[in-house]
Length: 337
Image 1 (cartoon, rainbow, N blue to C red):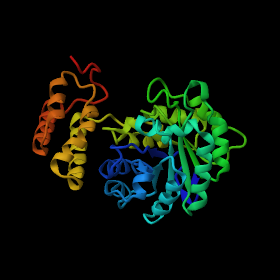
Image 2: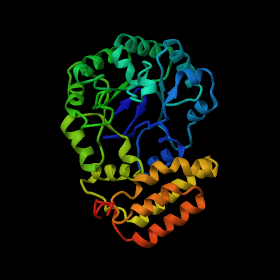
Image 3: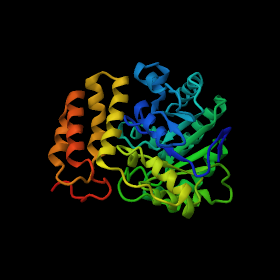
Image 4: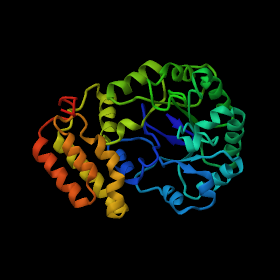
């Protein structure tokens, strides 16, 4: 598979861009376990134009991350064009336009998924960004604004005509946010439309190697994108790649394995942030890293309330000592017991 001049392997697996999740430490782990394509967190075109420090930090590309895309969002065409030109200086492999973000402060202001309510503006913006940069431009969007406006097939054709090099489709509407099941039938309709010639990447509910294989086989997508399922579970990329290549499932992780992985993640975050910010940023990962462990509720609360790295590592050590030999995927699912 190719996106512009970017050569990717057969059946590529991408890490979805996620705000406050896909920072360099998390990307490091996902790449280590075999993610084929990486993206920045969402970059506001308005903030980038103003050279906001926090936004500029999101633009940094670290060794070993390529191929790498910087994802931009905004509603103002002039700001998006300026941002695309600024982005060129950071030398990503592509620019991705976010037309799928459901966050209210983004979508309700007409950016992200909000542009699904103004398709003419979306098309004009995409065409002008494509014309303004020498980098490949791709788009990530959803099926439509709501169940009454699932216009993704028509939209995909119009976006393709602007000159984009690939299209990622999350199989939900903006109204769904992340509720219900992703509709891969419509993703398949786009991929198999006789006029579509750009790569189509499917996104939504891919949480296992078997689900990944099904999406390639059943819907014919060129690549898949993994998002929320990788939070606290970056090894999922290795599990998917092994299954796609061999048809065999890797053995599940033990709790000790997961403690080692989370500890490595914590150390990488500490390299980039002060201790308090590091602990706070890891809490979303702590919340799901040991999901399903029997009689774990009290320990999970302590882990989420820990406020220093030393305390975090002490609790992780306790988890390893108490549950270390258990397999994460074979323990009782009711963690509240």
